[in-house]
Each structure stands twice: as C-alpha cells, then as structure tokens.
Image (cartoon, rainbow, N blue to C red; front, side, top):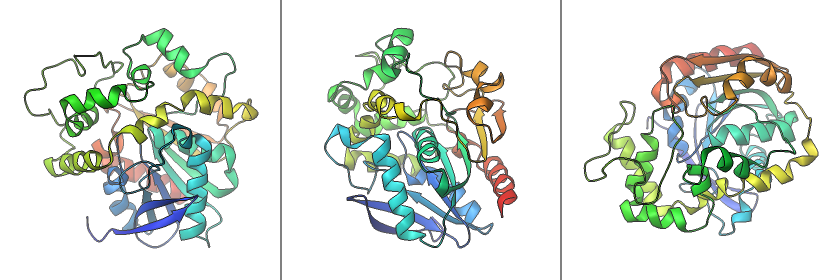
Length: 320
C-alpha cells in the first residue's frame, strides 16, 4: 500500500502493530469488527496526501498486535490505555490529536473522549453514535430481550461457541461473510444456518472489497483466530459496569458523526429518534453535525472513501 510504514510499538504491556504515513497533525484511526488497520487504507493514503500524519493500529487482539488470553483483558480501560500509551510513544510532541473511529473503533473513540478529553482535538466518528450509560439497561440482556437469542451479539457471548461454528464453515469465509453484510436488518446467526444462505459458492463480496482485500482479511484472521475480536463483545456488560462513574457525563470535544441509512446500527430500536430528535446533541453538546448518507451501508469508509475523506478533511481543517 503506497509506502505505508509498519512498526511494532510496546504499549500498556502488549506489542501493538501500527501502520502510518505522512507528516503533520496526527489522525488516529480506530478500526471495527471484524476489521484491521487495513480498513483505513483509503483514509491513510488520502489524508496523508493532504498534510496529516495518519496512524492506524491493529487494535488489541487483532492482526499483528498481541492478543492477551483473558476475556477480562478487553475492557474499555484496556483499549483507552493502549491508545494513550501509543500516542505517548509515537507522538509525544502532540498534546492533542484528531481521532476517527468506526464500529467498535467508534465505541472506543467515545470512551477515549469520555475518559481523556484532554488528548483529543476533535473526533470524526462513523456508524456508532455515543450511547450514554443507563443504569436501567444492561446491554446484552436488553438487546437479547429485544432481538432474541440468535442475534449476533447474543451469539457471541459464550466463549468457544461461535469460534467452533465459524471454523466449521472456515474462519476466512466467516469473516468475509461478515464484511459482506450490507443490509439494514439485524444480523442473526442461527446455528446450522449462520448467514441465511447456502455457503457452497464463493462469498458475494461487495463492490468495495476486491479479491486482494478479501484475501488480506481472511489470511490475517486465519492466523490469529477470532476469539480476541469476539472478546470485545463479551465485555459489553463489563464495560457498562465500569463506566458507571461517568453516568450523566457528556462528550466535551468537537464531533462530526456520519453513518449510512442502510447501516444495521441505524435501524436499531430508538436509534433514529436518538440521533435526530435531540438526545445525541444533548449528550454530545459539541456535535457539529450528524450526517446520514443515503444508500450507504455499515462499511462506510470503505464504500465511500472519497466522500468520507473530504468530509474528514473539511471538518479537521477547522481546528488548525
């Protein structure tokens, strides 16, 4: 990928793989599930060419970054700790940086802004809005009650179960099926019929994923396994408990938020109302804009890279 540099950095007790390119103000890119630094390939090249230093790690448990064995090692505190240590190591001269997140990376970016707003200049977040702590709604229990036991978040909870079912169809195949999910309906993974269609033909890749892209993702996950990535989901309730001290806290950094109207997150119960009817702005008072792109799916930065790069550049340019 066009002179992207790779290095390993010791952070918070683990070795973290980092892809980087460019010089100038730092943009820290945080990927989602089941993704890698590679998901930001278009943004790394695009923003580096516009005068930024793009930093895109493989998050804890992904790709070439270390994967601790314990489920309890994948909490919001571990993730934010990794990122603060990474910034201290590779950008010690920059007190504050720009942050971009997608999917789980967006969730971690919200935690970063909640716990350490002193380190964030501005946030450009994709696909997952800020969900404030609510003492009445334990996440996994709430989602399972609404969507049922076959919903992917419920299915990911029991250690070893989804791992073995994914292995039955081939882990690389499973990852590519997930990356190819591009409808706004909830994702269900019923046992014995995981993706709801025959799995004997090639994966129906979306137009924005080339066979080379698909091979990179599949190969990386076949090497590492998917348990560490699923451990993020297994910490939803633990993160809820740990974030109780921040009950009622707001996100106090400048934010722009973008998602597609075909994103399965957008169609979750109450999500549209929260984003458009004032709740999101109440919890994120410096939210400059919440953009919903028509006809765009969950994989927004790979599907519409030029559009996302332009929006990102225009937003961050306000803060120089």
